Image (cartoon, rainbow, N blue to C red; front, side, top):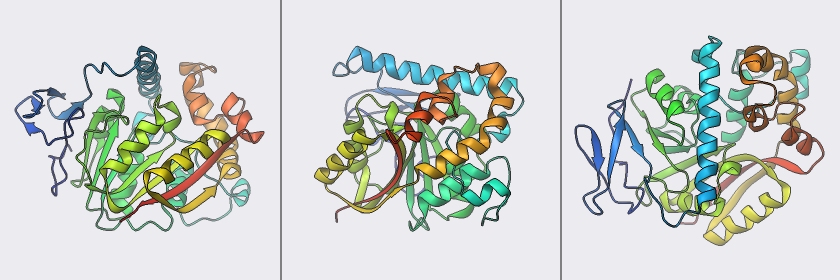
Length: 317
């Protein structure tokens, strides 16, 4: 299912001038700056700036590398016949009791730990009836879970990788969900139109992370909530939190769950390598991103150099 947008009044916008776009047969066009954005596959908005003179070449190269990494991941899932089951790309969350099959409030399944992570991240956040934007939605697992269990009015999923968004759109079953190809540093969203912005395990891949924070603040309504979870260098987290406070956010939750995601990674290691190791190769950058045991990111978190934190930040009314 590919839902039309806007569903309730939240529109896509020109990533350059941030004004509402006009939909045509094969594109979204900006009546202000004249930019035109194609519809991928005839229906998915492809809202990336073709050229950005202010962006350094090395940043563009970094973004291309990210897209290539996740495109390869999608291809590996297809080749191994597990694509339709693999809707999450994250560390997961586990309690010590899970090592012995302990009980939790979620049914066990292939995505159990990833769903548990989302549950922990959203704990205390009222999603019912809200307009939600997920930046870096990956393969749509969080969007699907939000629509199924949390009762949002609308959910928009945005991702830089075309293959991710193509999968999301093709597998979407919810009328309140829609997807677009977009850049976290140049959000194709108008000012002050989101109740909740969700971002999980992706901001460390952004060349200009402060630009991303600026964009989140811009698109949130007054009183809106930035739900943010990531694994970052400990110093980078401290710098980011200071910047977010200076922007005008108030922190309502700051929780370190490093031990829980490390345990989840330990428990999932065998199944992940068995499913994809031969196709992706043991040195794949995807393993690094997902924190597979033995990768530098995993080792740094185990040593305390990196932390995995959940932040809830409210935009001051």
